[in-house]
Image (cartoon, rainbow, N blue to C red):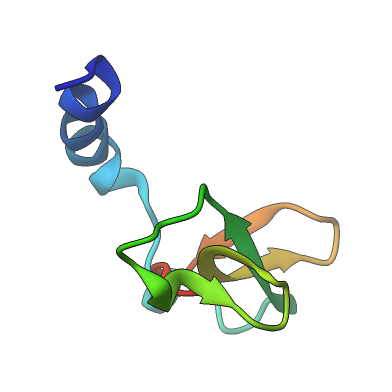
Length: 80
Protein backbone atom coordinates (compact mmCIF):
# COMPACT_ATOMS: atom_id res chain seq x y z
CA UNK A 1 0.00 0.00 0.00
CA UNK A 2 1.39 3.40 -0.97
CA UNK A 3 1.69 6.24 1.53
CA UNK A 4 -0.93 8.21 -0.41
CA UNK A 5 -3.38 5.30 -0.18
CA UNK A 6 -2.72 4.97 3.54
CA UNK A 7 -3.18 8.68 4.30
CA UNK A 8 -6.19 9.43 2.07
CA UNK A 9 -8.85 8.11 4.50
CA UNK A 10 -7.21 9.94 7.41
CA UNK A 11 -7.17 13.23 5.51
CA UNK A 12 -10.80 12.75 4.42
CA UNK A 13 -11.92 12.19 8.02
CA UNK A 14 -9.97 15.21 9.27
CA UNK A 15 -11.48 17.50 6.64
CA UNK A 16 -15.02 16.13 6.84
CA UNK A 17 -16.16 18.65 9.45
CA UNK A 18 -15.04 21.63 7.35
CA UNK A 19 -16.48 20.51 4.00
CA UNK A 20 -19.75 22.37 3.33
CA UNK A 21 -22.82 20.62 1.99
CA UNK A 22 -25.23 22.23 -0.45
CA UNK A 23 -27.58 22.80 2.51
CA UNK A 24 -24.88 24.96 4.15
CA UNK A 25 -24.93 27.49 1.30
CA UNK A 26 -26.51 30.88 2.01
CA UNK A 27 -29.64 31.10 -0.18
CA UNK A 28 -29.34 34.91 -0.33
CA UNK A 29 -25.91 34.82 -2.01
CA UNK A 30 -25.62 34.67 -5.79
CA UNK A 31 -23.48 31.76 -6.94
CA UNK A 32 -22.08 30.57 -10.24
CA UNK A 33 -22.50 26.81 -10.73
CA UNK A 34 -20.57 24.88 -13.37
CA UNK A 35 -19.35 21.36 -13.99
CA UNK A 36 -15.85 20.20 -14.74
CA UNK A 37 -14.08 16.94 -15.43
CA UNK A 38 -11.22 16.10 -13.09
CA UNK A 39 -9.01 13.98 -15.32
CA UNK A 40 -7.36 10.81 -14.07
CA UNK A 41 -5.18 8.13 -15.58
CA UNK A 42 -6.80 5.60 -17.86
CA UNK A 43 -8.70 2.87 -16.04
CA UNK A 44 -8.93 -0.23 -18.24
CA UNK A 45 -11.19 -1.90 -15.67
CA UNK A 46 -13.40 1.20 -15.20
CA UNK A 47 -14.81 2.25 -18.59
CA UNK A 48 -17.53 4.25 -16.80
CA UNK A 49 -14.89 6.91 -16.07
CA UNK A 50 -14.52 7.64 -19.80
CA UNK A 51 -16.07 10.93 -20.90
CA UNK A 52 -17.03 10.94 -24.57
CA UNK A 53 -17.38 14.73 -24.49
CA UNK A 54 -13.81 15.21 -23.21
CA UNK A 55 -12.37 12.03 -24.80
CA UNK A 56 -10.50 11.13 -21.64
CA UNK A 57 -11.12 9.47 -18.28
CA UNK A 58 -12.06 11.31 -15.12
CA UNK A 59 -14.75 12.18 -12.62
CA UNK A 60 -17.31 14.93 -13.06
CA UNK A 61 -17.94 17.43 -10.27
CA UNK A 62 -20.22 20.42 -9.98
CA UNK A 63 -18.71 23.50 -8.35
CA UNK A 64 -20.33 26.63 -6.94
CA UNK A 65 -18.43 29.85 -6.38
CA UNK A 66 -19.29 33.40 -5.42
CA UNK A 67 -19.28 36.18 -8.00
CA UNK A 68 -15.83 37.17 -6.70
CA UNK A 69 -14.51 33.65 -7.40
CA UNK A 70 -14.42 32.21 -3.89
CA UNK A 71 -15.12 28.48 -3.94
CA UNK A 72 -18.27 27.76 -1.94
CA UNK A 73 -19.08 24.11 -2.67
CA UNK A 74 -17.97 21.06 -4.66
CA UNK A 75 -20.25 18.10 -5.33
CA UNK A 76 -19.37 14.49 -4.80
CA UNK A 77 -17.64 13.06 -7.89
CA UNK A 78 -19.65 11.23 -10.54
CA UNK A 79 -18.43 8.96 -13.32
CA UNK A 80 -16.88 10.84 -16.26
